[in-house]
Every structure is written in structure tokens, then in C-alpha cells.
Image (cartoon, rainbow, N blue to C red; front, top):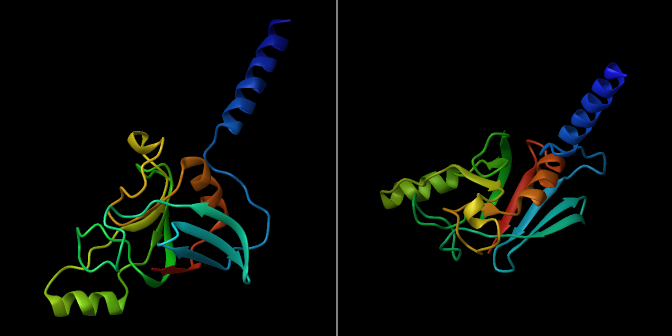
Amino acid sequence: MKRRIFLLSAASAFVLTACASKFKRYNGPRVTRVIVYKGQRKMHLMHKGKALRSYDIGLGFAPYEHKREEGDGRTPEGEYIIDRRNPNSKFHLSLGIDYPNAQDVAKARAAGVSPGGDIFIHGRPSIYASGGRDWTAGCIAVTNKEMERIYAMVKNGTPISIYP
């Protein structure tokens, strides 16, 4: 009897732990591009021209115009690649964007400034969990639940287009 109770308890704990994981599985169509429209505050996960999922987003605290330099609070605009993953992000989960590209570096160098870096798609820390629109240092923010799905769907090497 004790063994049966122990096994049921262990099985229940395993099931609850598995359900609570931030790492989700995705078996649908491959995301072939991420498209961000800063002015609309929308991000679309695309498969060959068709939106698989769309999300409301938050941006940098100075959301208008292209990122010019480190610390300007702007979200970059242009063509980039998802190039890294951070499962231990302080923003729940995050996907890195390969900003700055060669063009960004050249423009910043010509202006005598650093272009900055560390631009991500990420979730929200607890102080922004219930909202707040444009609060990042230049990243693209979604809810933690949405980030779990995005993290599962978007693979490294996926192109991302960020428009004004």
C-alpha cells in the first residue's frame, strides 16, 4: 500500500513538473521568417508568406526611428537573423537578433559612436508582467506565455525583418 501511494505521488509530481515547464514543443509548419512592424506594435511568425501566429509587442523606450547607438532605447530596423537562444534569460526566455550588422556598424563608426548590441525577442520581468508598452532598451517584448511558444517555434538561422 505504501509503495502504491509513493508511486502515485511520484507520478503526480512528474506530471505537474512537466506541465509547468517553460520549454514547449512545436510540431507545426516551420517558421521561415519573423516580421515586426514597429508602428503597429505587431510581430508575425511566418511560413512561406502566411502568418502562423501574430503577437502584440513592446519595444524600446524610444520606439521611433532606427537604432543609432548604444543606449538610445531604440529598436533596430532592417534585415537580421535569429542567431542565439538564452534559456536562462532574466526576461524568462530570449532569442538573440544579430544586430548590429555591417551596415549598422559602419553608420555608428562614421558617427563616432558604438552601435550597441544584445537585441533580443524576450518575455517580461515581473515588474512589467501586467503590461507597459515600450520599456525595453531596444528589444522586442512579449508576454512570458507567448515567449514560450515563440521560443519553441523559431529556430536559430530564421530571418527577421523589422520595419518602422
